[in-house]
Length: 322
Image (cartoon, rainbow, N blue to C red; front, side, top):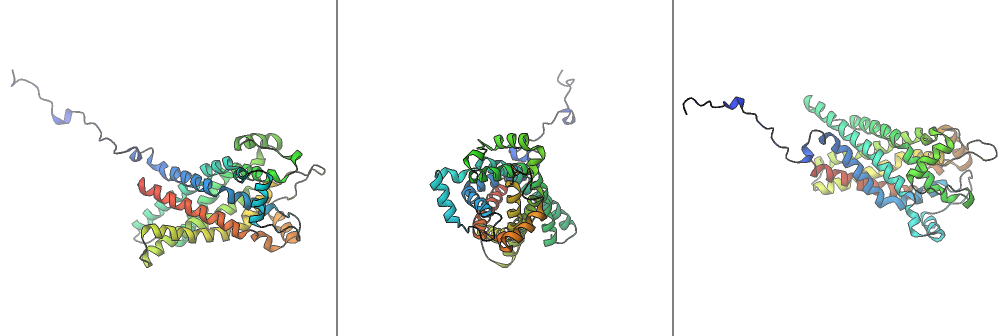
């Protein structure tokens, strides 16, 4: 009978969980978004800026060990590279550059975003604003950790870009970044992949201090004190950040390049430099203090647009994946 039929109470009916609106809201994907966005933005910027990076490395290695050595220009080096081979040679090491960004920028932007979100939450609960010092600490930490992780790819990039400076018989002729990462430890030991790690970490900390900290601070100040649109705020803040990133990090980038490029003397079996301080001392004694800032214009043209493209793309990706 109908009166005897048992009706299931609502509490007994299994309730399906509400479907996720998009894959971006997935609890496993969400925490990874800052890292994914960071890696994609860094790789995009590297694909645009790689020829400038190639010229920058050649400028830093020119006249090594000679105070009155050659004083090449960025245009001269570009002309020589093209004259000696082809335009595609300006993209030597692109695979290493992309791998470096996939590792290094993924880590540094992802970690920085994670740190800033934590700082914002703590500051909000304490009814205050995040300080410049807190942003700086987040940038320094994110940069240092990411640099240690990305050093092998960074070293492979420098080796590939400097290989063309050697006599033809002495060149390694790496086919790709993976070929370089396989052959370098086989010939020199696994520790060789972390050659120049200390200046790389210091450079990354200085660069992050200039790039991420000043970007976040500039954007905050521009928002408070100007009527610029959100897009123009991002563009202006990234330009400011690019300058400070270049100025603070170039000396360490210079030493990093020298240490990562060096190989043992075939006669003595000795390395040209014993470490960061020895490299800095020899450069000052043999080439002069200003050698650390040789090619600042090229470096700025490499760092500032790279920072701008990276930050603008990351900002856009963060906006559409919010």
